[in-house]
Every structure is written in C-alpha cells, then in structure tokens.
Length: 85
Figure (cartoon, rainbow, N blue to C red):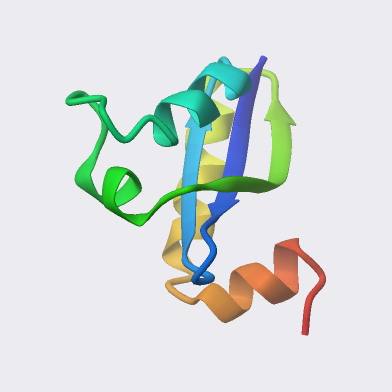
C-alpha cells in the first residue's frame, strides 16, 4: 500500500508527497541533518502530518499527488482536504 500525505509546518506552509512507509517518511522530513532530503523540508520544518490517503499502488498514489499539487493553492488544500475555512 502507498500513502499520499500532506504535511504542515508552524507557519502554515504545506508539503504534499507520496510514500510506501509513512512513518519513516515523516521522520526523514523532520530530520534537519539529513543531506539526502530536500532543502524545502529541511529549512521549513518541523512538519506535522495533517492529512493522509491510502492507495493500492504507487501509480495511483502518484496520480493523486499530482492532482493535489496542481491545485497550486494552500487555500484549496485547507478547504478540499482538511475541511477548514
């Protein structure tokens, strides 16, 4: 199984991703000493998991990740996924 997830940092920024191991991926996003992780998550943490969705395969998870990233708006994530106004 694969997960599509949304992380949020204290300033309200979001990060959207997909993974097979959600717990390990969240730990890696919050590891600010990891040279293999992206600069955005390293510099903008700590991150909290605010939304997740399970998928049967990586292809399905990647399609959903692209769909969410195409929204291009934190407001749409808050409204459509998190139910916030």
